[in-house]
Image (tube, rainbow, N blue to C red; front, side):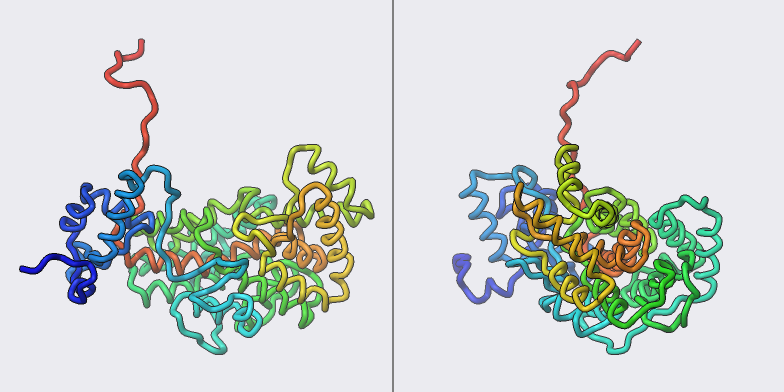
Length: 419
């Protein structure tokens, strides 16, 4: 029997069982799966779906790294990571399945970009339509909410109502989930109260969404900017809401429930609500005629200036750059665009930061007569496609793999019963 040389061609084809991988790494089988869930090791399901196999060379490489790092465990000193084939952010560029997202959004509609993310195939002319029972259920549920309900409240309720109207929602096969995706997104849009006369239900999704956000007549350049914004917000690595979706999918929650998990996370000011904060800031700059007092007040209050900087882009946010380019061709966007540039220039005296997509989205919403909550609505509708793409990926993984262990820091037991 020959020695197991990692360079031998036969080893490249042989795959290890979980037990063999654990022995080679010197860890428990549970730790092997922890490596997988954090993106440190790849796995492949066995044909019967009852286990996983691992690439021998990759396992040996990880074992060498562990020895070099002093036996660092799967949980110590590492941020959680999840393997995905969907989105890459690298060198201030954003890619969907390896294709430049800005170029993709400039040539294809939101629906076509969503199809690319879901399937890796382009469907020219793709349109999404919702079944009447789903829309009726969603509208009734949304109409029952109080007037002050936020857009994300309405979208969450619409998603739950649409789920109840779908008796086949527990089917997690790829075709079934894709069918859900193509009907859920237009259902969410149709459930929002119209601001203007609703158009053709077969029109591009951006056109239908416009009537839910603005009472002004739509023009070609502005609709194109809205459609591009939707496409550029489809997915963005493992944002907090996307991680929540993958956790839900890992527990085999159906697609509606997974989307609901994402909708529950985006309301924070550091996530989906950031565009609304930037919108209100721009209106204040326009009202005061200068960004200086507005930026000063943000800094004085110890807040970050909305719409500036992004932890994943040391340089420019490519999504913001693409949207600003389109907004420059819209005359009525000029005042808001000038206000955004004033904010960036003023803040640069304190900390030089580039504009991010939230500021560009704020220019679009503020110049289109939309409310400040419109940015969050656009974000949520757009990201629903990405959430479903991640849910689809997670359904193909081992169930409940994304289950971290708690590090208990409380008093050691046993303790006497409290009196």
